[in-house]
Length: 499
Ligand code: NAD
Image (cartoon, rainbow, N blue to C red):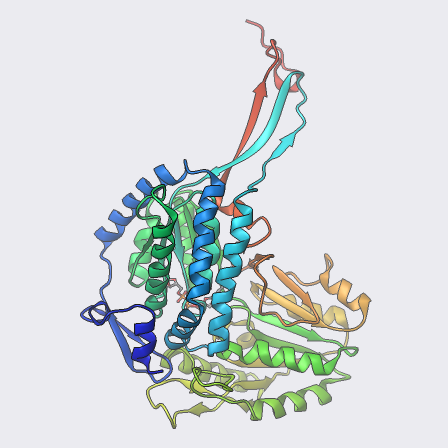
């Protein structure tokens, strides 16, 4: 299929792809595939008003009926899985298998949200006063602004949107300026679900805002955007979090990670090698949950590291649309320059580099790079920094406590894992004195979370939770109700106040 075929299969007409100021390039060969119109500040403000109007109607629609819209969205996504998966590959460069996986994740969250739409449980609480009932109920919040990053261009939107919609909130989505086409394709898919749903869906339940951080800033600063769910770098989160806090808005931050694996002396090394390679080089090291730090017990270091170097030297790198390729390109030249600069710094901090070269033969305008392993004498400055590229820093340890200390001694706190066959080691890693991350796994890598669990991390990762478990509570407001069905008016805490 040509690039044009992929765009046509996703329903884009030529006129939609031309004439705007925002150039969209495919990382596959660096060529321009579209020039899109961007939204102005005043258009963003208008969208927020229209989102508010949609909220007035949508919050009155019963939650299970709202779930029906999400069920239809899931059906439309199933029908469009291959086309959207291919478009994800074209626009962000991850291999087609991962593009398909991303769409499957969208389908899974829709299924989850449909079930949730018949739950949204509150609590009943014991009251100290006779003839009184206490309960906790959950209510829609208002317009939900979703800001997403280039590396999961559609899944992150769906995690937020499927849940926000069943919770009664319309969505305004600002995708990454590097991946607006996948967002516009999702809008087309969503509109098909709305057309099948019926008249009780208001207009503007989902609006897509095309542009860079300036339009994102307008969205974030508006007091009429009740929730801002922002996924991206820690730098972005710092700016967005402060803006939303200033106006006492609700913020869900999903920011950078610096994920580690501890491989203990008892680990199943064959399993560990497969998990390491998938987590470190998948999506060319551009997952928030990519494995970036490997902390290896000294007893197996000289077995594991040569084995990894061997696998790395044979990795199929190339066009992510081609079957058999496991590593696609970096998003752009800036990402490759950042990778090179990190490798230079790592070497100047005592690291020994294996791999990591630039590959420019086939597509000189694209940013392909060979994944790198860097053996480090310790956790130096560069190792504590998230470089969004396939660099795996390897360090040695002798005691588990020391390994957990290294794992936790970075500013980020997203995902972590341990490979061990010793139950004591596994349980210690998961205990109060173990990993300090939002995600901690045993005998699987740090990436590839399932949607049933809450996703997110601590410290500079931002503290937000999305997707499964009770993450839906981030999209609703909690209300505590006390109902007096007695004929008296007793005050709480036994206070006397007779008039
Ligand atoms: P980025 O921070 O450059 O951009 C992310 C989004 O934020 C884009 O849509 C961008 O336009 C917008 N943005 C940036 N500054 C803004 C501002 N001041 N106000 C409003 N909007 C602003 O990130 P990226 O390069 O697209 O993505 C890579 C980063 O995202 C990595 O750090 C990665 O770890 C992180 N990420 C985190 C998760 C997670 O769930 N924790 C998931 C995916 C990506």
